[in-house]
Length: 231
Image (cartoon, rainbow, N blue to C red; front, side, top):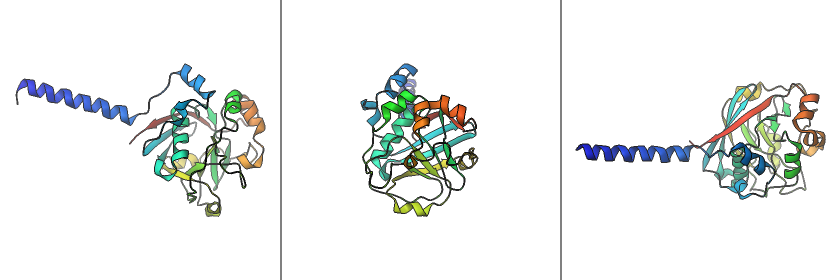
């Protein structure tokens, strides 16, 4: 092979590597763009289709866990979860509900203005895929008779919660790394630090944001940042 052809082959290889990298990592908005987007849930950026499979990496005060998101399991929910993670919604938030041997839940924002913007910004239902085995995750919803009420809160099953399979949750994927981190999250407040969406106790947390949660429930573990990649 000539020097010229070697250079050409090298250039092609480099170009392909750049394209591959571009497809492996979701683009991150600037801090200014992120702040504006968080207050505008109607922005088209929130509806970008998720890849077929993506990894949502949560860095927390107890370590890292990764959720593997499968779009085929529930496209509407997967798109919402992908974009919430991609655009920084979960950064600097609190894992407000940890019930040992049951579930861990988060999704209230640390800024009350953002919570107000997203209040009632519901997602249409995907077909139920409710197999709540340990390590699976899904969006919570408001409850019986409240169709199409998924929003921003995600729960992870810390045990095999087959009793919940009768409900129309749509499981979107599994924990691919860090299940021990999820098991170690602070659970001393149990159902008292906001509980679930359906219990009707989250108003003070949503209205007060991180300032309220840190004052009233200082031991809650925190999500520091979330990054998204495509395997």
